[in-house]
Length: 105
Image (tube, rainbow, N blue to C red; front, side, top):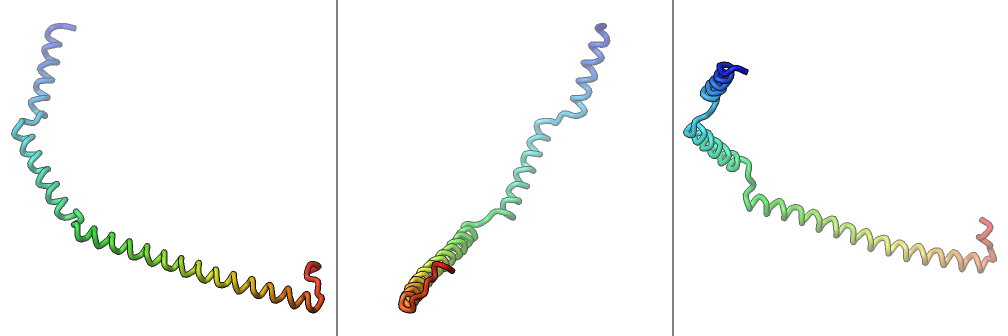
């Protein structure tokens, strides 16, 4: 590689950097613009403490309602099981009294 080719390559690189590199002030200006944009975005999209507390309260209310429904269903199931057991015992007593054999059914 000749010396003039190397010098030409270096000159091309220097010219490219002159054309495309940013200055410190341009970079600082862009950073300031980005900060302003970020602050504006946060103001528009951030959730306030009040909104977060409201959502939390709503979730807790719904979970509590679900738990209460589950407890009611458990109580109803226990009551139905007791009723079923009593009816089954009465049927067994009647079958014994009438001398019926349900084991063949």
